[in-house]
Image 1 (tube, one colour):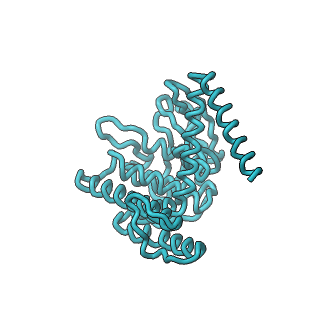
Image 2 (cartoon, helix red, strand yellow; image 1 turned 60 degrees about the vertical axis):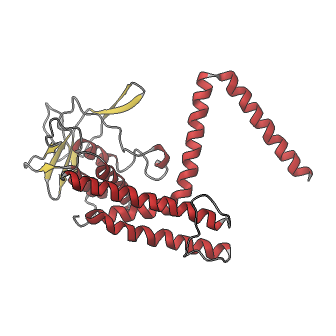
Image 3 (cartoon, helix red, strand yellow; image 1 turned 90 degrees about the vertical axis):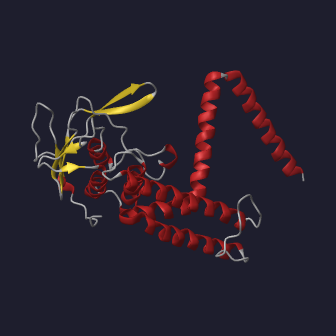
Amino acid sequence: MRAPVGGQGGRFHDGGTPTQPPDRGAPARVLLERRFADGEETWAMLRRIAYDDRHLGELLVPADPATFTSDLTSVPSVLTWLVPRTGAHLPAALVHDALVGPADDGAAAYVSSEGHVVDRVEADRVFRDAMADTGTGVVRRWLAWSAVTLVTLLGRDQPWPAWQRWRYRLTVVASLLVIVWLGWCATWDLLDRSGPLAPGIPWIPESSLAAELVAGAAGALVVPLVLALAWGRFRVAGAVLGTGLALLLHVTVVVGALSVLAWSAEVLVARAPRVAAALAALVVAAAAVVVVVAVLR
Protein backbone atom coordinates (compact mmCIF):
# COMPACT_ATOMS: atom_id res chain seq x y z
CA MET A 1 0.00 0.00 0.00
CA ARG A 2 1.33 3.42 -0.96
CA ALA A 3 2.02 5.90 1.84
CA PRO A 4 -0.77 8.40 2.68
CA VAL A 5 -0.42 11.92 1.34
CA GLY A 6 -1.18 15.47 2.40
CA GLY A 7 -3.83 17.53 0.65
CA GLN A 8 -3.05 19.61 -2.45
CA GLY A 9 -6.23 21.25 -3.68
CA GLY A 10 -4.78 22.36 -7.02
CA ARG A 11 -4.72 18.83 -8.38
CA PHE A 12 -8.33 19.09 -9.59
CA HIS A 13 -9.17 21.13 -12.68
CA ASP A 14 -11.89 21.47 -15.29
CA GLY A 15 -12.00 18.44 -17.55
CA GLY A 16 -14.07 20.03 -20.31
CA THR A 17 -16.45 18.00 -22.48
CA PRO A 18 -15.98 15.56 -25.37
CA THR A 19 -15.94 18.60 -27.67
CA GLN A 20 -14.12 20.98 -25.32
CA PRO A 21 -10.55 20.38 -24.06
CA PRO A 22 -9.58 20.39 -20.37
CA ASP A 23 -8.59 23.70 -18.83
CA ARG A 24 -5.82 23.47 -16.23
CA GLY A 25 -6.37 27.08 -15.29
CA ALA A 26 -9.98 26.55 -14.26
CA PRO A 27 -11.23 24.73 -11.15
CA ALA A 28 -13.13 21.48 -11.49
CA ARG A 29 -16.83 22.01 -12.18
CA VAL A 30 -19.21 19.36 -10.90
CA LEU A 31 -22.27 19.55 -13.16
CA LEU A 32 -24.68 16.66 -12.66
CA GLU A 33 -27.97 15.66 -14.24
CA ARG A 34 -30.38 13.52 -12.23
CA ARG A 35 -31.58 10.30 -13.83
CA PHE A 36 -34.32 8.14 -12.36
CA ALA A 37 -35.26 4.76 -13.80
CA ASP A 38 -36.78 1.59 -12.34
CA GLY A 39 -36.85 3.16 -8.88
CA GLU A 40 -33.11 3.86 -8.89
CA GLU A 41 -31.55 7.31 -8.78
CA THR A 42 -28.30 7.95 -10.65
CA TRP A 43 -26.44 11.03 -11.84
CA ALA A 44 -24.85 11.80 -15.20
CA MET A 45 -21.83 14.13 -15.45
CA LEU A 46 -22.29 17.02 -17.88
CA ARG A 47 -18.63 18.02 -17.63
CA ARG A 48 -15.55 15.93 -17.07
CA ILE A 49 -13.31 16.23 -14.04
CA ALA A 50 -9.54 16.19 -14.43
CA TYR A 51 -7.35 15.04 -11.55
CA ASP A 52 -3.54 15.01 -11.49
CA ASP A 53 -2.63 11.87 -9.57
CA ARG A 54 0.80 11.70 -8.01
CA HIS A 55 1.59 8.32 -9.56
CA LEU A 56 -0.63 8.03 -12.66
CA GLY A 57 -0.56 11.57 -14.01
CA GLU A 58 -3.70 13.16 -15.43
CA LEU A 59 -6.94 11.25 -14.98
CA LEU A 60 -9.67 12.65 -17.22
CA VAL A 61 -13.02 11.18 -16.19
CA PRO A 62 -15.40 9.85 -17.17
CA ALA A 63 -13.88 8.19 -20.21
CA ASP A 64 -17.29 8.17 -21.91
CA PRO A 65 -19.62 10.85 -20.50
CA ALA A 66 -22.48 9.65 -22.73
CA THR A 67 -22.79 6.32 -20.92
CA PHE A 68 -21.39 7.06 -17.46
CA THR A 69 -23.66 7.42 -14.43
CA SER A 70 -22.84 7.55 -10.73
CA ASP A 71 -24.72 7.02 -7.50
CA LEU A 72 -22.39 9.58 -5.87
CA THR A 73 -20.65 8.21 -2.78
CA SER A 74 -21.66 4.54 -2.56
CA VAL A 75 -22.53 4.31 1.12
CA PRO A 76 -25.31 2.17 2.65
CA SER A 77 -28.11 4.39 3.99
CA VAL A 78 -27.49 3.09 7.51
CA LEU A 79 -24.00 4.68 7.43
CA THR A 80 -24.73 8.01 5.76
CA TRP A 81 -24.70 9.71 9.17
CA LEU A 82 -20.99 8.84 9.27
CA VAL A 83 -19.98 9.20 5.60
CA PRO A 84 -22.59 11.26 3.68
CA ARG A 85 -23.21 10.66 -0.02
CA THR A 86 -22.14 14.19 -0.92
CA GLY A 87 -19.91 16.87 0.54
CA ALA A 88 -16.32 18.02 0.11
CA HIS A 89 -15.33 14.52 -1.00
CA LEU A 90 -17.80 14.42 -3.94
CA PRO A 91 -15.24 15.17 -6.72
CA ALA A 92 -13.06 12.34 -5.41
CA ALA A 93 -16.07 10.00 -5.29
CA LEU A 94 -16.97 10.81 -8.92
CA VAL A 95 -13.39 10.15 -10.01
CA HIS A 96 -13.45 6.80 -8.19
CA ASP A 97 -16.78 5.80 -9.75
CA ALA A 98 -15.44 6.61 -13.22
CA LEU A 99 -12.25 4.60 -12.63
CA VAL A 100 -14.08 1.45 -11.53
CA GLY A 101 -16.87 1.59 -14.08
CA PRO A 102 -17.86 -1.68 -15.76
CA ALA A 103 -15.47 -3.00 -18.39
CA ASP A 104 -16.34 -5.33 -21.27
CA ASP A 105 -14.58 -8.65 -21.89
CA GLY A 106 -12.27 -8.21 -18.92
CA ALA A 107 -10.68 -5.04 -20.32
CA ALA A 108 -9.28 -2.40 -18.01
CA ALA A 109 -11.95 -0.09 -16.62
CA TYR A 110 -9.71 2.92 -17.23
CA VAL A 111 -6.37 3.75 -18.84
CA SER A 112 -4.79 7.09 -17.86
CA SER A 113 -3.58 9.76 -20.29
CA GLU A 114 -0.03 8.42 -19.79
CA GLY A 115 -1.07 4.82 -20.52
CA HIS A 116 -1.31 3.52 -16.95
CA VAL A 117 -3.88 0.76 -16.44
CA VAL A 118 -5.98 1.53 -13.37
CA ASP A 119 -7.31 -1.55 -11.58
CA ARG A 120 -9.72 -1.45 -8.64
CA VAL A 121 -7.02 -1.45 -5.97
CA GLU A 122 -5.27 1.51 -7.59
CA ALA A 123 -8.62 3.28 -8.07
CA ASP A 124 -9.29 2.92 -4.35
CA ARG A 125 -5.90 4.46 -3.58
CA VAL A 126 -6.64 7.34 -5.97
CA PHE A 127 -9.93 7.87 -4.13
CA ARG A 128 -8.15 8.18 -0.79
CA ASP A 129 -5.52 10.59 -2.13
CA ALA A 130 -8.12 12.64 -4.01
CA MET A 131 -10.20 12.99 -0.84
CA ALA A 132 -7.15 14.45 0.87
CA ASP A 133 -6.85 16.94 -2.01
CA THR A 134 -10.50 18.01 -1.53
CA GLY A 135 -9.86 18.78 2.13
CA THR A 136 -11.81 15.80 3.46
CA GLY A 137 -10.97 15.05 7.09
CA VAL A 138 -8.53 12.26 7.89
CA VAL A 139 -11.02 10.05 9.74
CA ARG A 140 -13.74 10.34 7.10
CA ARG A 141 -11.44 9.66 4.17
CA TRP A 142 -9.88 6.58 5.77
CA LEU A 143 -13.35 5.26 6.62
CA ALA A 144 -14.53 5.86 3.05
CA TRP A 145 -11.37 4.29 1.57
CA SER A 146 -11.73 1.26 3.84
CA ALA A 147 -15.37 0.87 2.76
CA VAL A 148 -14.53 0.84 -0.97
CA THR A 149 -11.62 -1.50 -0.27
CA LEU A 150 -14.08 -3.89 1.37
CA VAL A 151 -16.20 -3.83 -1.81
CA THR A 152 -13.07 -4.52 -3.86
CA LEU A 153 -12.07 -7.48 -1.72
CA LEU A 154 -15.55 -9.02 -1.86
CA GLY A 155 -16.16 -8.27 -5.54
CA ARG A 156 -15.26 -10.06 -8.75
CA ASP A 157 -13.01 -7.48 -10.43
CA GLN A 158 -9.81 -7.93 -8.44
CA PRO A 159 -6.56 -8.22 -10.44
CA TRP A 160 -5.59 -11.52 -8.76
CA PRO A 161 -5.91 -15.26 -9.41
CA ALA A 162 -9.03 -17.05 -8.18
CA TRP A 163 -7.39 -18.64 -5.13
CA GLN A 164 -6.24 -15.24 -3.89
CA ARG A 165 -9.67 -13.70 -4.40
CA TRP A 166 -11.24 -16.41 -2.28
CA ARG A 167 -8.53 -16.12 0.33
CA TYR A 168 -9.32 -12.42 0.80
CA ARG A 169 -13.08 -12.99 0.74
CA LEU A 170 -13.00 -15.70 3.39
CA THR A 171 -10.59 -13.72 5.56
CA VAL A 172 -12.72 -10.56 5.38
CA VAL A 173 -16.02 -12.30 6.06
CA ALA A 174 -14.62 -14.47 8.87
CA SER A 175 -12.94 -11.58 10.69
CA LEU A 176 -16.00 -9.32 10.49
CA LEU A 177 -18.27 -12.15 11.68
CA VAL A 178 -15.95 -12.76 14.63
CA ILE A 179 -16.18 -9.07 15.57
CA VAL A 180 -19.99 -9.09 15.35
CA TRP A 181 -20.17 -12.28 17.43
CA LEU A 182 -17.86 -10.84 20.10
CA GLY A 183 -20.03 -7.71 20.17
CA TRP A 184 -23.07 -9.95 20.70
CA CYS A 185 -21.33 -11.77 23.56
CA ALA A 186 -20.10 -8.54 25.13
CA THR A 187 -23.62 -7.10 25.11
CA TRP A 188 -24.99 -10.00 27.15
CA ASP A 189 -21.95 -9.86 29.41
CA LEU A 190 -22.54 -6.17 30.16
CA LEU A 191 -26.20 -6.92 30.90
CA ASP A 192 -25.15 -9.73 33.27
CA ARG A 193 -27.37 -12.10 31.35
CA SER A 194 -26.81 -15.28 29.40
CA GLY A 195 -27.77 -15.25 25.74
CA PRO A 196 -27.80 -17.79 22.92
CA LEU A 197 -24.31 -18.51 21.59
CA ALA A 198 -22.94 -15.90 23.99
CA PRO A 199 -20.28 -17.22 26.36
CA GLY A 200 -18.63 -14.75 28.70
CA ILE A 201 -15.91 -12.45 27.37
CA PRO A 202 -12.66 -13.22 29.25
CA TRP A 203 -11.38 -9.62 29.26
CA ILE A 204 -14.61 -8.15 30.67
CA PRO A 205 -14.42 -8.49 34.48
CA GLU A 206 -17.32 -9.03 36.87
CA SER A 207 -17.12 -5.52 38.24
CA SER A 208 -18.85 -2.15 38.05
CA LEU A 209 -20.53 -1.13 34.81
CA ALA A 210 -17.89 1.54 34.20
CA ALA A 211 -15.05 -0.98 34.53
CA GLU A 212 -16.85 -3.43 32.24
CA LEU A 213 -17.41 -0.72 29.62
CA VAL A 214 -13.74 0.27 29.68
CA ALA A 215 -12.64 -3.35 29.31
CA GLY A 216 -15.17 -3.91 26.52
CA ALA A 217 -13.96 -0.82 24.64
CA ALA A 218 -10.36 -1.97 25.03
CA GLY A 219 -11.24 -5.33 23.52
CA ALA A 220 -13.15 -3.60 20.71
CA LEU A 221 -9.91 -1.82 19.84
CA VAL A 222 -7.34 -4.59 20.29
CA VAL A 223 -9.16 -7.60 18.81
CA PRO A 224 -9.90 -5.99 15.40
CA LEU A 225 -6.28 -4.84 15.13
CA VAL A 226 -5.09 -8.41 15.65
CA LEU A 227 -7.64 -9.83 13.19
CA ALA A 228 -6.64 -7.20 10.62
CA LEU A 229 -3.19 -8.76 10.33
CA ALA A 230 -4.81 -11.61 8.38
CA TRP A 231 -5.86 -9.10 5.69
CA GLY A 232 -2.25 -8.92 4.43
CA ARG A 233 -1.51 -5.83 2.36
CA PHE A 234 -5.01 -4.53 3.20
CA ARG A 235 -4.51 -4.76 6.96
CA VAL A 236 -4.98 -1.01 7.41
CA ALA A 237 -8.45 -1.24 5.86
CA GLY A 238 -9.14 -4.26 8.06
CA ALA A 239 -8.07 -2.32 11.15
CA VAL A 240 -10.22 0.71 10.29
CA LEU A 241 -13.31 -1.34 9.41
CA GLY A 242 -12.87 -3.75 12.30
CA THR A 243 -12.46 -1.12 15.00
CA GLY A 244 -15.23 0.99 13.48
CA LEU A 245 -17.59 -1.99 13.44
CA ALA A 246 -16.70 -3.01 16.98
CA LEU A 247 -17.03 0.47 18.49
CA LEU A 248 -20.11 1.52 16.50
CA LEU A 249 -21.89 -1.84 16.32
CA HIS A 250 -24.76 -0.93 18.62
CA VAL A 251 -25.25 2.52 17.10
CA THR A 252 -25.32 0.99 13.60
CA VAL A 253 -27.83 -1.66 14.67
CA VAL A 254 -30.14 0.98 16.18
CA VAL A 255 -29.90 3.23 13.11
CA GLY A 256 -30.47 0.20 10.88
CA ALA A 257 -33.53 -0.87 12.86
CA LEU A 258 -34.98 2.65 12.69
CA SER A 259 -34.29 2.76 8.94
CA VAL A 260 -36.13 -0.54 8.44
CA LEU A 261 -39.01 0.72 10.59
CA ALA A 262 -39.28 3.93 8.56
CA TRP A 263 -39.17 2.00 5.27
CA SER A 264 -41.84 -0.41 6.52
CA ALA A 265 -44.05 2.49 7.53
CA GLU A 266 -43.66 4.06 4.08
CA VAL A 267 -44.65 0.81 2.39
CA LEU A 268 -47.63 0.26 4.69
CA VAL A 269 -48.94 3.81 4.24
CA ALA A 270 -48.61 3.53 0.45
CA ARG A 271 -50.28 0.13 0.15
CA ALA A 272 -52.79 0.10 3.02
CA PRO A 273 -53.38 3.61 4.38
CA ARG A 274 -56.36 2.59 6.54
CA VAL A 275 -54.41 -0.22 8.17
CA ALA A 276 -51.52 2.17 8.74
CA ALA A 277 -53.81 4.74 10.38
CA ALA A 278 -55.38 2.12 12.64
CA LEU A 279 -51.97 0.76 13.61
CA ALA A 280 -50.68 4.27 14.36
CA ALA A 281 -53.72 4.96 16.56
CA LEU A 282 -53.16 1.68 18.39
CA VAL A 283 -49.49 2.51 19.02
CA VAL A 284 -50.35 5.99 20.32
CA ALA A 285 -53.04 4.57 22.60
CA ALA A 286 -50.68 1.93 23.97
CA ALA A 287 -48.03 4.57 24.60
CA ALA A 288 -50.58 6.74 26.43
CA VAL A 289 -51.56 3.79 28.64
CA VAL A 290 -47.92 3.12 29.51
CA VAL A 291 -47.37 6.77 30.47
CA VAL A 292 -50.53 6.96 32.59
CA VAL A 293 -49.76 3.69 34.42
CA ALA A 294 -46.21 4.83 35.09
CA VAL A 295 -47.41 8.19 36.51
CA LEU A 296 -50.06 6.59 38.75
CA ARG A 297 -47.70 4.09 40.35
